[in-house]
Image 1 (cartoon, rainbow, N blue to C red):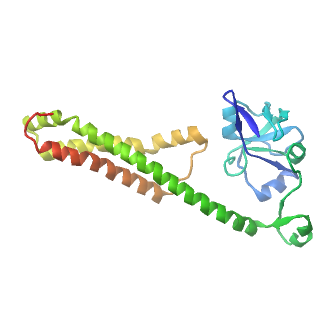
Image 2: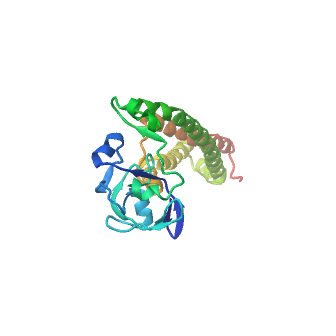
Image 3: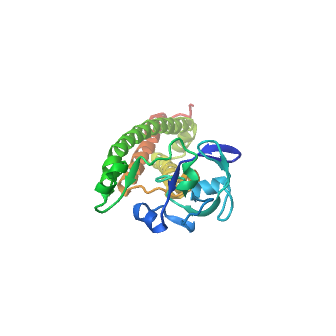
Length: 258
């Protein structure tokens, strides 16, 4: 579907559901934040982040284009927090069925011993089948995300290291003056290290990362402590190394040459 965000139409994932709220809650938990999830014709539930970006609230109308291009303006009756993991838009199946290429269900999800009776209607899966079907997708996505993070992290590390090195080299005169007024090499290096630590800690602090991520994706993501610890430790080592090497080279000189 297409949703107007900041004056432009953006694509958003959608799902059509039927049955009662109890039926829906038995198979997924969208984490409803406001409103009710019992959908009647002409009503829609929206991911909280998308609702914020689109400027709509509970009781307002979300003007959108359905998959076949039809304009619609359903009433927003609920917002939920797990749109990225499920679908950003949730509306009644009947409202969506006549606007898609095929309205027939390709898969049926159930629990209990009813699989054999539903088999003639299409592919029937239970909770274990869902997990098995999702495992290859999760593994592929995890591998792609790891590769992308490594590439971006490598570029960021090179850029940050170069910046710190050039900053220290540009201060050779200042370091030389500190030596001339009586500071020892160890004292100057200690000063450089504390400056680098202040910069590094400001960059990896949750107080700066969490608001940035919430502004981009909405809810703050969960990061395992071990992963965050490894990330923070790597950044600290990089920062200290990037300032120590050029600082030691600059302190070998006893003059104020630049």
